[in-house]
Amino acid sequence: MNKKSQAYIHSINLKQKEMINISKDFFNKMKTRRTIRDFSSKDIPVKVLENAIKSAGRAPSGANQQPWHFVLVSNKKIKKSIRNAAEEEEKAFYTKRAPKEWLNALKHIGTDANKPHLEKAPYLIIVFAERYSVNKKSEK
Image 1: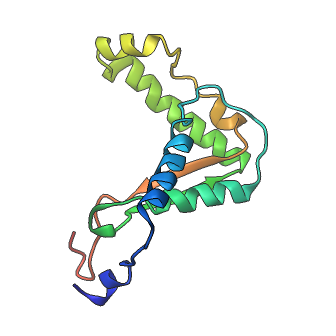
Image 2: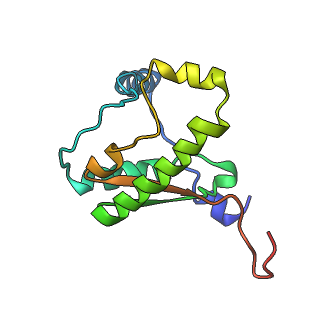
Image 3: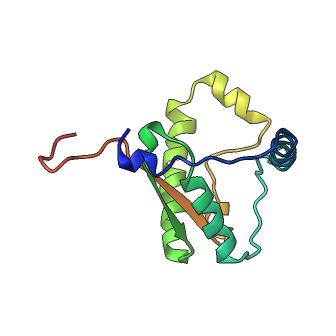
């Protein structure tokens, strides 16, 4: 084990009852999570989003690489550009790429290629995934 990987190792000495209570509290918070398709234009503190992004950035990944980056967007022109690009892709999906079965499965949700929420939301969180890296020799 190298020094870098050792830096992440730490022990938490909790009693079994404490572990159970912590895990139960976490589960109770997580079970209130839901997918929402009704978006609010209400502003929220940027710090809330920054904390959410920091939490997401700590998600486990292969070799602990966390190959992702997050960008918080509030600029109206950029949000409009994102909406236009998303709607173009979605239109192609709904009209050309999606199988009939998939479209039928989406009907009850009421989703389509129109994405006005991408402009109405005060912020967008954009996730960039790094599919591979390049070393100093420009090799994948």
